[in-house]
Length: 175
Image (cartoon, rainbow, N blue to C red):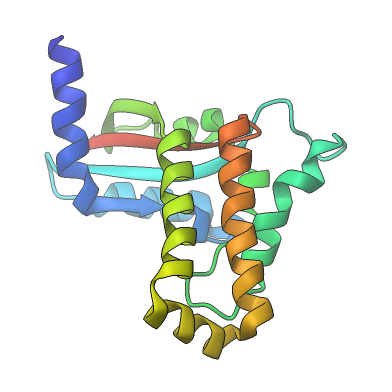
């Protein structure tokens, strides 16, 4: 019970200090994780979030193409919210390995895939029903771009719901 309370309290405080690894090029990701760890104030609570493929999805598996599509589209989008294909190269074990050092203590590791799927579905609904946002996106990316973006949001939500990709949140406390 106490551990559950600590995890919920840590999650509340860490929301303001969340670092998303999906936006960092793979060649810089390990250095960036170490930079994040080194720059935290002592006793600060923060989180690192990232998306990765399910363990059975490898480069030669048939599902690989289905899983990589939303990330390939996002990396070519004109939007400032640039993502890349890092999920195809990351794993929970690899990130935990990078975090296993004297800079921080891991408080919790949580699979937030269903939460992320709900957020993506909500973003897609917002793109449809918020006329100001819809008009801005259509103006910026054209009607085809707006439809493609909606489709990719729902595609990624479906991958998360199906368990083909995972979204992880690791909450840490700086030493």
